[in-house]
Image 1 (cartoon, protein in one colour):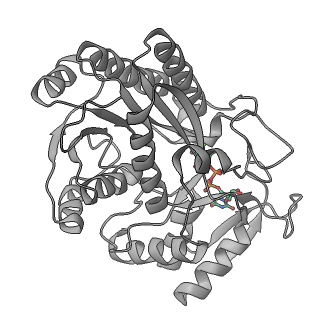
Image 2 (image 1 turned 90 degrees about the vertical axis):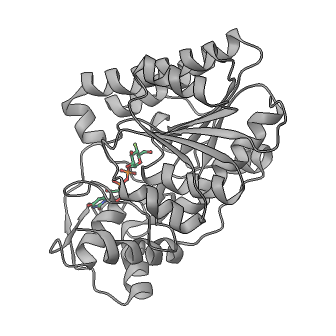
Length: 340
Ligand code: UFG
């Protein structure tokens, strides 16, 4: 719950990252005070000025690691933090399989230190960046929040473990108000083209890969399998525009301020789009070619994944508004300007 002052102050961990930066823009646009933490492990310092240019507002930035107790303690001593949005964490599935200890150490340590510091300073409101990856395999779509959980890689397991930690912590303290947002596939970029997704090296995910192909940096897209049980045989996912996703965080914050307890909420559009549908939309909207070849399935991939979105609508009043065309247009606009 919130002791109402004029402007709530929100601590955003990992705020310079892809989803964090878009969420900070939404917070500033809605007159929240923002304290951002990032260690630039997977983000660039230029993002800070890009956010200031987009919003014409300023915020506090502190460079550091959320697992550093003294650093975190100082942040909470120097600012009256009303709520935290916790994005900080490693997020590459393949890397997590190769370096599991690094993932468990980092993602759990940062969250535990954050939670201990919040307790020490009497901050009870938290929105956590979880993922649809926490769900166990299911033949049937959509995925409901009540579906069984089960993960297949260390990255996903850190998300599931953190959800469990938050559950136990919130059960022990009746003042805690936590929300785990289970993202489906965030893509796109800010319409200004100033912030977006710029992964290091060769992208793992479909949209940044398409952008690299469309901008001539990679020769062709490899479509991982066209023999799935889907209308065109390629994998289907629930892509959500990052600006819609950022708006869901604001609604989640407002919800967290009004009640106590813990909720787990899907954030998607509720629609599945295939790889070839995405390629087609990208070509049509941006008037560029996206050469591709069909190759074998990627190990661990599922045929289809999409969300049931009724709980997000009921609890948060959230409905995604942007289309696949919007996602393709904005991702390309950012990629042309920024991707190396
Ligand atoms: N795909 C290709 N070629 C590529 C990349 C992807 O054909 O070069 C296909 C995949 O096979 C899949 C679809 O595009 O059918 C989407 O793949 P992504 O890698 O973009 O996304 P995933 O659904 O595999 O993974 C995403 C996040 C993970 C998260 C997972 C489950 O990247 O962090 O959703 O929520 F764990």
